[in-house]
Image 1 (cartoon, helix red, strand yellow):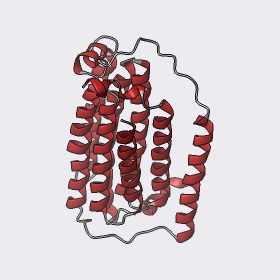
Image 2 (tube, rainbow over the protein chains, first blue to last red):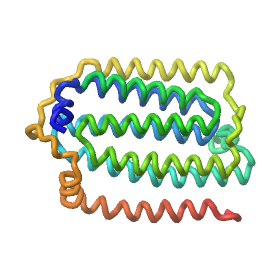
Image 3 (cartoon, each protein chain N blue to C red):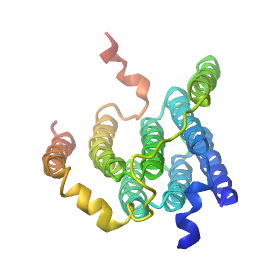
Image 4 (cartoon, helix red, strand yellow):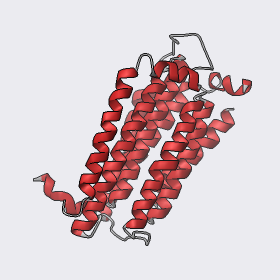
Length: 109
Length: 163
């Protein structure tokens, strides 16, 4: 436990920033890349989590617990979002018998 | 310790790329679970033990099981072949790469962190988080229950047969 708690003083904060930026970009690329609605929701989770990781890193380096509480709230919002999003997917499958996101393009006009 | 960081980061990046590029939805979910477990390891490295446990319980235990359940319910476990056109996919990869480069350039010259409080390895434990959550953030915590109620009602409304 002792060497774990001193670990963050050995790792520069930039490493966490770069990791979060890479994860966020991968998530955004996935949202543009896929047509499967469930896969798009999963890529959204990836982006949520990169932000969570960055908030936790800043909170740990500042020794301020507010950031970690905020991550907790983001997890709450993510859970609600997934519940509603997946029920939309179920409804979409029932109505148009497909989960292709391009079938929902009537909202564009 | 820095070795552990690089190991977990490599697992996360590879699994995230596999989430995007693998075709079978079941495989996507499995890779995302692997990515989330590696992220729990990152939380432990950052002394956020409470968040690590909550992350495992909420994400891997609830959200990903919900994804798996919906995939099973909709019978999507065969590889679906709906894909975007090649031009769209290549441009998606290029856009993601350019976005990554721009963010990298913007955050490359980082600043020195001047910690507001002295270094304390106890802030990520349950007692530290709980004191902040039920002191400073009590009202948002209570309001989030309303959010959950509305999300539950919304999910039920969407799930109704004649909706």
